[in-house]
Image (cartoon, rainbow, N blue to C red; front, side):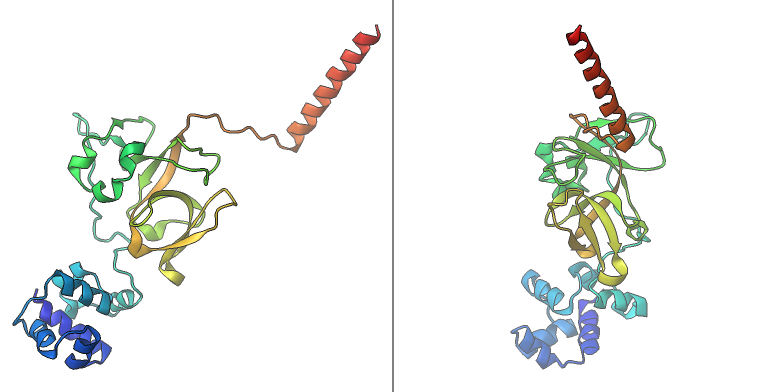
Length: 266
């Protein structure tokens, strides 16, 4: 695909001349005209400028034929959505399998978690991770285990490992679903997710600890989403009694105190 054709189409959609775009980008008109006409090829620095200016990914700018875009495609692009939210194009997911050709659950250790955003699709990164198998999980779905840091998601405590199911269609995520969200900036985060794709092209991430404020993450900043399945914890969750249990406990204590008093009097 000739990048010049795409540049010309994007410029005309903005209703600007070559000279206006060149001035906006601090380029000479002849330089920009050369990119559109195929006389010259922009270097990486210029590609980044063009990508930011037209609000389109470099990959789309270089590889896609924008003349074939539908109104819906342009609408998504104008809204800043540059990912396949519904997963209609298969997301690249590298996984480790056993000798019996069964998917294994990769466990991302705490030490390896910092590099996950760079290595999540790298076979060399994944093949050195510990793996395990849980027979009660579906064989038709893909799972991965992630480390939990901090105190934002009680009763899941720091040091636990959350097992998530890979989400192909992000639009299917329902409000209030606990998920492991892999973001470009924050890496691995475990939050309760609220789907705000229709209004903000984003997900709202909330903690179960009220001390932490909810925040929005745009879909362009998300690499993967894994739906919570279960977790492995080094600590026993705090036991909370309901009103009836508390009442029974108080009555039991009162009975014991009464018996002790009666024994002392004797």
